[in-house]
Amino acid sequence: MIDQLNIKSKIYRISPGFDLKPQSYPKKENFVMFVGNLNMDKVMAIGKGLDSLIEVARKIPDIEFYVVGKGKYIDNVKHDVPSNLIFTGELFGKKLYDMYKRAAIYCQLSLSDGFGLAIAEAMASGCAILATTDLGQKGIIAKQKDIPAMIKGIKYLKDNPKIVEKMGRINIELSKQFNWEKFLDEFENMYEEISA
Image (cartoon, rainbow, N blue to C red; front, side, top):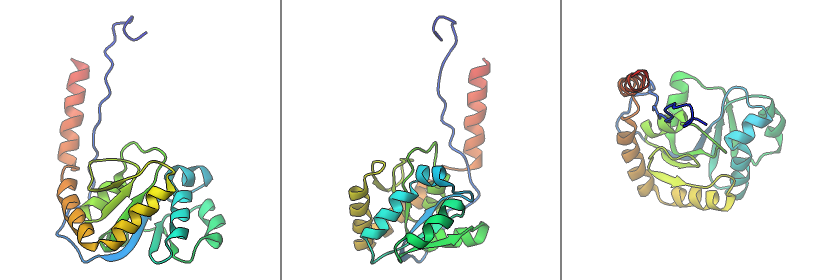
């Protein structure tokens, strides 16, 4: 139909910028961090992969998993999760960024994600990443809902701190591409192309 109307069709990917500036590699603690949002109802929590994270945490009791976020779904499930899964509630600004800096591993298990800003923030903080979304980060990509692969990936990262540090250092460098200047350039180029 688009061809019949003589309309140009193209998908543009514009990587957003963010305010967390990459630093030198920070001192890390051996825990997994997961960032949800501030209104985690059941649909949002499942979409973010929180149910998968809970199952992974059950199978790896010797590592702590921190979940940033709040909402009705979290209130309903937090009494039935393994003791190594800790809900932090909402974190903003410095408190959130300090947690990213401390976390050795960042885990994002979304069923779908357009970009995954939290992954970029974790990259800038030197985390090794286990995710279902690929932004070009250094880490492990797992298929959605593939609990055995997620468990294997977290165990591998937990047991290999030198590899985690190497991934974290590379991620700091890779995260430098997600800046506001590049965002504006890409947006301007897209605008010029579609308005020509």
